[in-house]
Image (cartoon, rainbow, N blue to C red; front, side):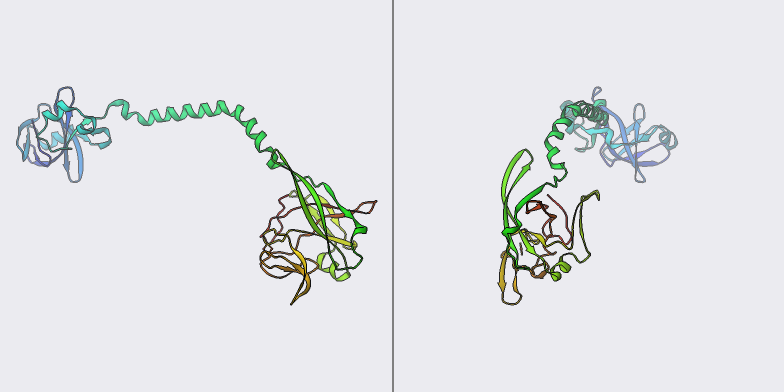
Length: 312
Ligand code: FES
């Protein structure tokens, strides 16, 4: 039997639809089922003993439409593949009259179980990952541990307070060496901050709310800069992008800090007068040791942010 796709399917009492696929039995090498399309729905019917006659245009059945409906099952395309996909040449030769692509064979059971196999593959991977975790975790923790070390808050000596000038409001640059452990590498930097002798006006500008508290991210108090201190230390990093700035005479603002990178201008208290800097210069924790050394905690804050975000 070589039914054509779109051939009409006619029962003893009426036409019931048209052939949309034929399903072949790869072992018997012949058609075993028809897929009949009617009213937009497709159903599968076993044709054994049902065929009364078959031409290119119609397939006549030996049963009434009611009996056919009872014997049919819903068609699920995913349960079948075309014979071209699975390459069954003897079957293709046997059914060469059927429109190409119209002959299906049932999907092998193992292929149908693909999702279940995938599940077992993934399940095996998860088990493997769980077994590997106790080995990998200590290594990962060892590698990333330095990144999550709390800030050290070490006091660093900047220099003798006697080394700065006597003139209030005139800052002096103090350079120092800083040793930093970055991951597992120790680096040495030369850094600099500005120390300024305070006038009442500068005090009010630097400490508008009185004594200035420094706290860690958990809110624990680290240090308090007293407003009535003689000096203050301003970070040497511009708050725009972190460049070093200079103490210069400016045509418009007089003696100020000028950052050469993008021309931010700060007054002696660190307040922004001009340029793209998003916040005032950062004030650092400061103390004077018994021997007259200016000591600081060399805090670093994220550049380019209006608020202070500590990064070191
Ligand atoms: S880094 Fe100072 S103005 Fe841009």
